[in-house]
Image 1 (cartoon, one colour):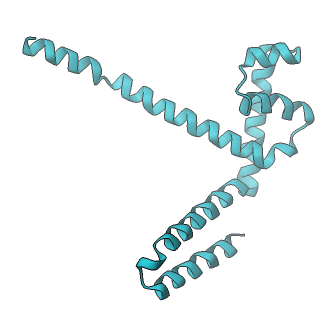
Image 2 (image 1 turned 180 degrees about the vertical axis):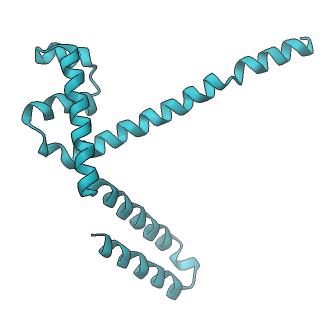
Length: 142
């Protein structure tokens, strides 16, 4: 291969489109996880119809068309309902902050577990003080 052919191959494999496509996939996964958490925490505040449709979309990963066919409504109707439910659940989180508190407490408990794993390798008094500090933060958070 000639040097200009090698450069052409490198340019094709390292395009920004591919890189941004991968970032978009990560963002999509994070958005799905966020929506699933919101549904877990606040789903009971939706109507039965909303819970059924939104649950199929989020938890069962059905397409809008599949849900529409099963529910006997239009695809656009399902889309609108899913969008409204997403906004409603985000509004609940904005007011109540249950998911963000849960995530904060989860991170602190993970930190405690990490400290306990290294417990025998370190000075025990320092580990105990750090665990006590983190547990106090958790109690304040609740």
